[in-house]
Image (tube, rainbow, N blue to C red; front, side):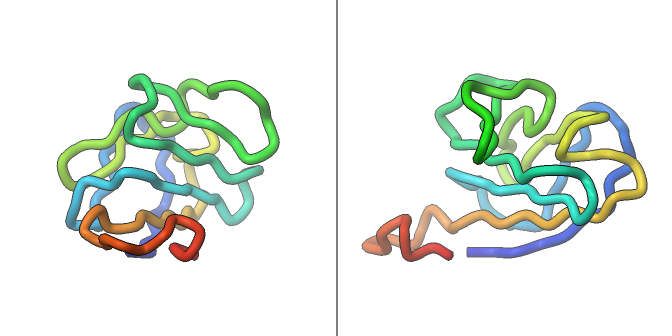
Length: 102
């Protein structure tokens, strides 16, 4: 599992790197930008979910790339001048139940 941070800049299709692997799941939380969002690898492109909202959210975490996630502008994942933290468990962590990731 890796925990990283980045500063939002409001740009569209921004690649956020630093995990070093293609995640199967990511949580993104802004310090001052509303609720956290999460994305599973099998969700459609440009779809994420919240922890409180029902249904899929668009324009938050758009996609997973080979070693990064892609965020969208003006959303809970890339507002300008906001610091974000994200976490992704390694797909190589075999035998570890998802409830033990955090």
